[in-house]
Image 1 (cartoon, helix red, strand yellow):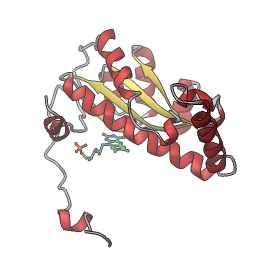
Image 2 (image 1 turned 60 degrees about the horizontal axis):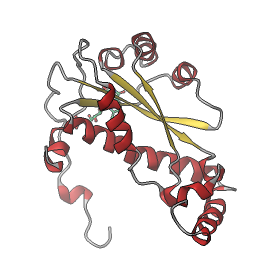
Image 3 (image 1 turned 90 degrees about the horizontal axis):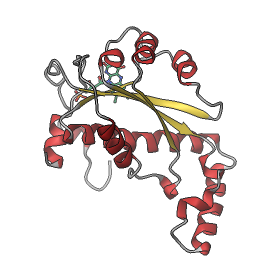
Image 4 (image 1 turned 135 degrees about the vertical axis):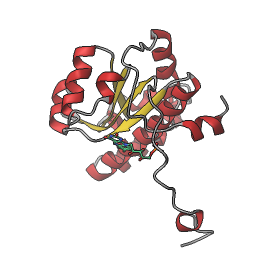
Length: 200
Ligand SMILES: Cc1cc2nc3c(=O)[nH]c(=O)nc-3n(C[C@H](O)[C@H](O)[C@H](O)COP(=O)(O)O)c2cc1C
């Protein structure tokens, strides 16, 4: 499948085939592709809990106000941001580069995030957003489908996945095989309502 087709055929699927099991190879491929998503300063501040255990998926469905996708989908990915990634051995983010570059990035990270919880949170949202789209498009290439979700009780889901205090949940994505096509698209805004040439 080429990229345009993956983009066009990705839909938020509501009904998944509960008998379909994703292979460990496909999970590994998804993981390998996901970590190629861009992050500011290559800080790789996303963390992913991937859930294959049926009993845990059922608990997640309950936390998701009884939406069926987590329990019927094959894989649930909970996309989280590590708010302290900027200071956790930051030299490793540029370990293939010169020590000077590594130091430069370390200092830049501290400048941007040390005194700004807002920047830390924004960065988690940005990084997980990119990772989310990577996951959903890669799933299409595998002949699979997905549903991004934020309709869940945050505290319940945090408890289920044992969320560390310095992490936050950004969203979850269910991956699996669709058993029913998505409904007709809601209706996209026209290009002139969302694109502005050179300035607003
Ligand atoms: C951040 C986010 C959260 C969402 N949460 C849910 C959800 O909890 N349950 C659900 O069924 N769909 C959820 N959706 C799917 C959207 O409703 C869907 O993406 C939108 O209607 C556009 O449809 P499409 O993705 O099929 O193009 C979510 C989508 C996004 C991006």
